[in-house]
Image 1 (tube, rainbow, N blue to C red):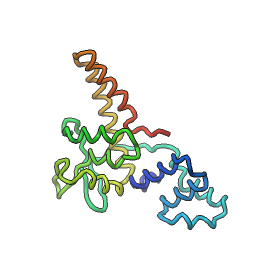
Image 2: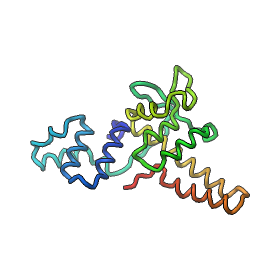
Image 3: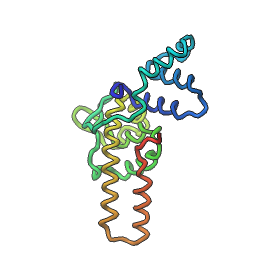
Length: 194
């Protein structure tokens, strides 16, 4: 089922699951509504045991994160995007955007918009050619598993780079401390807070 989920659906489901105000029945109805594209009211007349069974049948996959891998390209209904695999290709602007959005899984589409470059034909456009907000909005419709795989790939690459930088550079103690803070803070980059 993970392979059928969009980034927008994942964000909505995760938000509902983490909501401490909703009771279990409200969560089940809302999550089923997101997954099936129905109105919540359509579940009001169901027997609770049937609702629980339907919830279990359709959303039990959500209890464990999927295995995933990075892909070269993703497509949304509007556009095709190329994943930026190379850390050396990231601009200062991308890096600033990444650090601004990377602390919260609820901004997965905004994080991903830093790494996916819009395509025109066989060529990819420079970062910022199409606004970050427009790309982030479009990525809500992208396949979650593909986007998640790319984000996990980049997180692991980034973590290894920072770790190697800390251990191999000759720098002041203050500089090392700053890099160690970045490395530790970055450890939650895409890890779900479950």
